[in-house]
Length: 156
Image 1 (cartoon, helix red, strand yellow):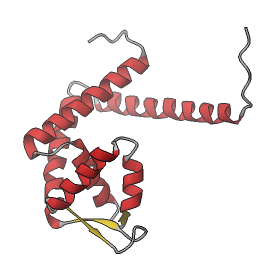
Image 2: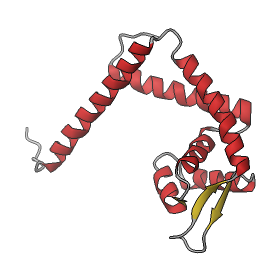
Image 3: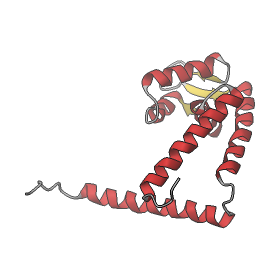
Image 4: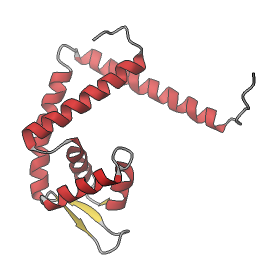
């Protein structure tokens, strides 16, 4: 792998490698994938997580069919309970069994970060994190400013 690639390429390559590794490690060690990790972690972080909120946000990453399969897997395996009578009341509740799985998955994720940051000093890691955060913020601000400008017609 060459570090003379453009920044966008390197960021995308890192994202792809990280996602592939995480999914493979979680499937190998726990029999579930990255989507399960994200759902369980989200439910753990928000004990009153509305099912509608979760599905709306998850559609950014998963198709409706993938999301249906994920939710079925989570509930059928007893990792998540969905409680509430109406759509506006339905919440995702992490079960004790789900929390145990999540804790084991957290150990796998800790090892993932150890692997990813091998040979990277804490200072370099923090600089990378801070730099990427700043660059993303700069682009977000600039994009918002562009979206407020009137659209101009293309000219020859």
